[in-house]
Length: 322
Length: 261
Image (cartoon, rainbow over all chains, first blue to last red; front, side, top):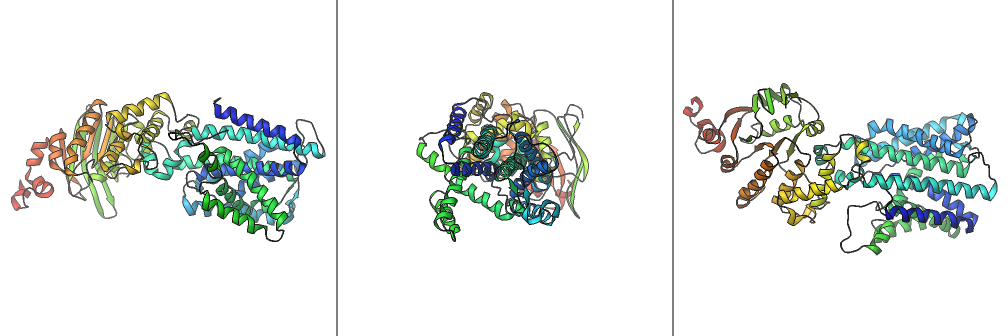
């Protein structure tokens, strides 16, 4: 699977990793959160391409985050690789279980059912005194295979950790997009009956998408928990889910790279907006989304493909770079 | 089962108190081309839907290559080797003709499991060459890069049928292949379809309203009336049957003699 696009993607990741050494610490921290969230967005893109919009993806995000926090609290395990993978597995299992129900629904019913699931978790977390209720609780600083960096070095190490997970996720999702199952996104949106009568179960295809997107959101949440060193029920709240949908619209579902670019752009715009208009930054963010929808209905990702589109570009490789 | 590829016994389907099909028993030998005629509501599509697993029969059995397939889900039946096309062509409008074919060929080549399909690339030399061969065989290569949404009705029908046979079925059911096609185009379309299916060695059952087409392309005709098969013989014999003429083809008005013939 060593295509030119993969090689290009790998080079970009390495370049970004190296550039972190020369960037101001605030930007590295911002990018850490942005890329952790980009994994959630990447999961949304997988569903979005089939026309499914989950308004409760924060469910998996919060499960990944709380898994890391709980391991830190109740076990001696501190290794970041182990705890992030535990977060991924926890979110994947939840996605698999609720997928049996959720995969039978489409459109607004899918969106609302997903929202309901996430709000159930929010309700449970808020009522759990042992988990700090609405305040949440502290997340233990992890160790990197025994190494425990401090201060600025820890921030760098975390950034590289996030970047590593992003690179793997981007590659896996790229392979998935080019697979038979991954290529069914548009066919499923077009005509479920035909997909069924060709011999593939549409419900199972949706179920698989849910599990992949759940795992990605779980990894994103786990990494965010490590970066922020705190978890609270807000991570499962519907506004968090809405934020991810917002970034997905901003990024567009055209390519894997769009999720990362979109997420970074979102965090940057938000930081700038908060600095400029501390009381009304949502106004700027809303305007940014409005302009995107008006002028780039297929998202920021489409800017790239618009610039390099050749007259007879092959259409059946929606994976794009990385 | 006596060498029949498809064998139906005492098939019945009821929706509440409405009987959509009853007492249907048919054996289809391999490579036969069977025409299915009948007025609207006579049970033709119900019959097709039961064989392809879209509807579960209320009673009776369906055997395919000596295997009981009664009540299996449509996906499983497709995988076993019975495919179908639709009265309204079911294609992927956003994709081009060749992309439609490649998707169909890739699914047909792969397994039922979505996890296996998630690890198989869509684009493979085999799926490509199968898709190329299919658009040639069904004579739609001229439209290969046109989006399916923009196709003329006849081409869309051909694409639908080409996709239905992408998984190499042994039996194909065509639900009104010529509906929505102008009279001038009907024969040409059926010529292409039938010769392609002969090449692929597929047993065909097709639902059709045009008696001329039935007479020309079928080896055998099943006439449905009120949920049952009232005639099952060679086309000429069936079309000359007074009951068929009275109830289905409309070539003779209904009279008392017809009912006792």
